[in-house]
Image (cartoon, rainbow, N blue to C red):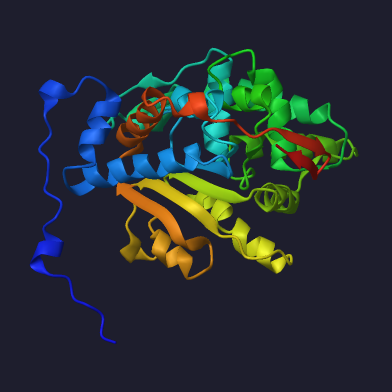
Length: 350
């Protein structure tokens, strides 16, 4: 039987509702209004709806994946609020996000600059530039030394990034606005699958170098332990949702947990909710810009998954989405997951 074609009446059921700023009193009002206008405002509004559904589903474990210069970009506390207020249950980021957060947990700052600044002059002052923002390399070196010393004091064995970030979080927890520290305080697993590709990796390379020279055994970061640990979180979750800011390794790492479980012998259980804000586009073939529909061909997302991608700068989109969720009171009705680990084995997920 031929599929019925939509009529003109079918196609004209939902009118655009023009944004009325005289009735917009909060971030939540603004994002609600975005849902009824056009272009990337509407996609951002749809992301908000997807996240609201995921975070209101009592069976859903929510994974947050962050990439890009989100900490220097001023979003450190916004990410921390996702954890502090119980909106997410697992955190996966680049090493840079965790390292810059650790740096700020010591009371150090990032500084505004001109994107056309003289970079060789900045190098003379040991200032590192991230577009229009600076960090102090002298203070980075202090953090490097502290991380290397932390590694020196640990039992020389393989660690998952989650285990090592737990030790960093214990140090950072003196700062209530620290993302790494808040994950430690709340017992939320924080994974950095590409830990070596960051200043944390540089610090651990120093530790390895000095231990090797002293003929002592260094610690090691075992990224396959990461795979095993995060797979257990997925396996014990009836449903899962993902929230990506940017793309890169965190996006792929969380998405691929489902195929990894299938290879390990578990039944198919793709992610059921997916929202992403990114400035990357799909036509270049990169993972950061690929659509969730493309990921469905890999079995990563359920055929009935609620999904939305908004192409917007994270410094604009993330505060709007988190502000929307908090002002809607989603956190007040949600119970964040609680973990019991025995080494690399996840004993329980409640």
